[in-house]
Amino acid sequence: MCIATITADGQLTIPSEMRRQLGISRGGQVHLECQAGTLRLTPVIDDIRAAFGLLKAKKSVSLEEMEIAIEQAVVEYYGQP
Image (cartoon, rainbow, N blue to C red; front, side, top):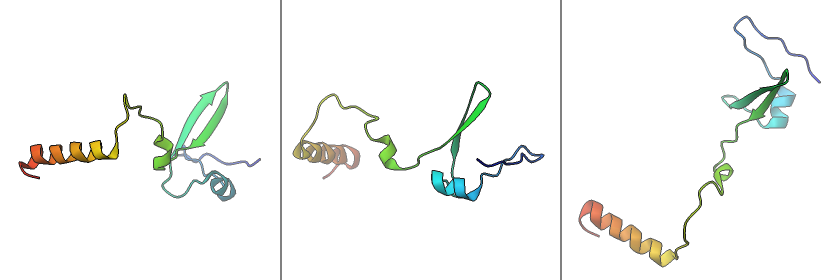
């Protein structure tokens, strides 16, 4: 357990050991939540893997179908393949 001091501007310094444990680096973001008089700090994950499973497809398509759709979109946009 650590004790930190709030500055006159309302800023708090998270001790370096805790930042290392949480994977928070300079410029990193944290999510703050207050419940029943307790402040909870959670690092914001900025890794693309955090979005995995966020979107759901109505149906799956083959690689060939994707390539055809891309080619059609290029033709529609540029007027030629």
